[in-house]
Image 1 (cartoon, rainbow, N blue to C red):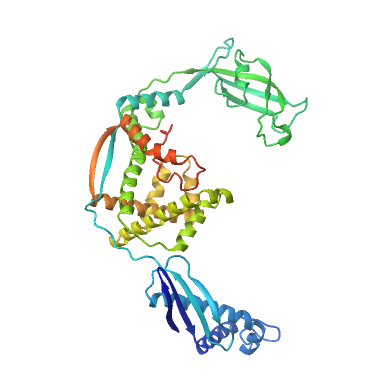
Image 2 (cartoon, helix red, strand yellow):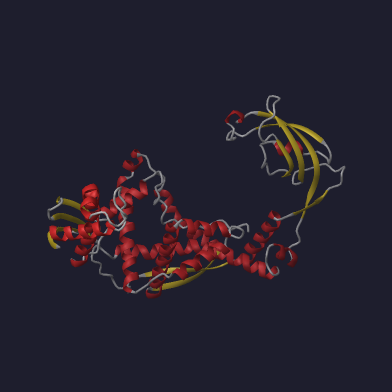
Length: 457
C-alpha cells in the first residue's frame, strides 16, 4: 500500500492511496480458500468444490467483498500513518479498480482542528447555594396533605357536594344505542375535578347513596371512535357510595404514609427535593457563564461536515421554509455547539477524564430511585436503547469536565433564598425568551435554566 498527500487545504486533506494487484489477488485467494470449506454445490461434496468453480460462479461478489474489506483496512491505516484526527466519516473516491488491476482511490478527510487551551486565570463564575425557607416546606406539606387526603363514608341520606368522592355504575347511549365502552362499573369521581366528562361532576351534586341519576354529557372530540366524537350522550348512573374528604393531620403517621420515617424526616426529604430542583436551574446558569467564557477565549476552525451534520440534526423536524427562515441562526448555534464540544473534550483528554460502566450504572440507579414504581420501565429503556446509555455516558463525562473547570477557576459561592433564586432564574431566562419568539428548533432553548415544578411525590 502506498499513501501520498494529494492536497491539504484548511482542515480538509485528500490522500491518494494505491494497493497493488498482487496484494488484492492474495486476499482473493485467501477468501476463496475460506469459502471452499463452506460452499456446497451440486456434484461436489462440502469442502471439495474447486476454487476455480467457486470463482466462476461467485467471482464478482467475492471481489466486491474483498475490495470493501481492503478499503476499510487501508483507509484506516492511511489515516493512522498520516496521524490525522478525523472529523466525521471520510469519503472514498475510486479511481481505478477491477480484477487483475491495481486499486487506486482518493480519501477525502475532514480533520479536527489543533486546540491550544487557554489557562483558567481569567475565568470566574458564581455558584449559588440555596436555602429553603421553613414557610416553603410547610406549604409543600400542606399541598401533599391535600393531594393525599383520605375519604370516609357519608350517611345514606347525606347528599353529595363538591369535593366528595362518588362511586357509581353507569350505562350510556348515543341516539338510543349502546356503544363500545358504554358501560362502567365502580367508577370513582372526586366531584369538582371534572376528570370524566365536561359538566358531568356538577350533575352528580345532590345525589344520595342508592339513587338512580340520569344525566347528559358530550363525548370528547378526540374519542377513539371518530363516529362518537362530540356526540350527545345519555347516562344512567346507579350511585353506589358517597364519601367525604377528611383532613389529614400532619404528623408522624402522615409522614409514614408518605414513605418517610417521621415528620422531621419528611421535612428533610421535601427540603432536599426542592433544593435539588432549584439547584438544577441555578447550576445551568453557572455552567452557561463558564461555557461563554471558554467559547469567547478560543478561536477554532471548524470542519464544515460537522457543522452541516449538526444543522441537519437540529432541523430534521422542521419544514423547508422554517429551515430557510432560521438558516443563519441555526448555523451560529451549530458552530457554538461543535466548538464547545471540541473544547470540552480537549479538557477531558488533557486531564485523562473517563467515565466507567459502573458510573453509568450508578446514574441509572439514581434515576430509578427518583421514579418509584417505574423501575422496570427505566431499566428496559436503557437495555433496549444502547444510544440512550451512550448519551447518558456523554452527559456524565461533560459534568466531570465542568466540575474540573470549576475547581480551577475563581468560583464565588453565593448563598441565596428561594425568592432570590426565582429572580436570578427569571432574569437569566428573559433574554432567551425575547430571542425565541421565532419557531423553536431543538437548540433554541439550549441555554434556558428550567426551575422544575416540585414533584408531588
